[in-house]
Amino acid sequence: MKKDIADILCNQIIDNGLIINDAYKVINESEFLTHRPEKFIARISSIQSYCYVLYYDYQLGKIDNDGINDKMITLMNGVVDYKNSYTKYSYGYKVMNSILSVLIDTFNDINN
Image 1 (cartoon, rainbow, N blue to C red):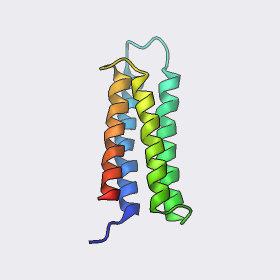
Image 2 (image 1 turned 60 degrees about the horizontal axis):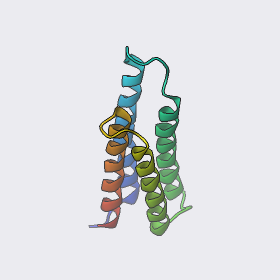
Image 3 (image 1 turned 30 degrees about the vertical axis):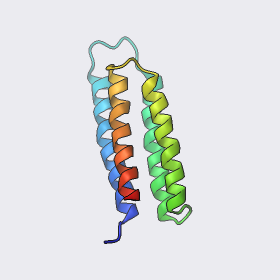
């Protein structure tokens, strides 16, 4: 059975979108924040944008499977760095860990 890479990348966007939308909801509804976590927001926004660009570049034929693997590895490394910049078990750490899980699943789906 032939894998549809575009579908796998699309599912990645959807899965990360659910995590990111939930993070925005938590931020917007929090009664305990004294200021908006702009750095965290920029990070999750950049991850989301990176996933969109990856999908569109594949759809437009700008990158092949090797290019996807290279970009996915770069993205996963970046998310690991983001995750490790937060205190373990903090909300930022948990969100980045959830996003990383989606990225790892996507990478495995593409390569298995």
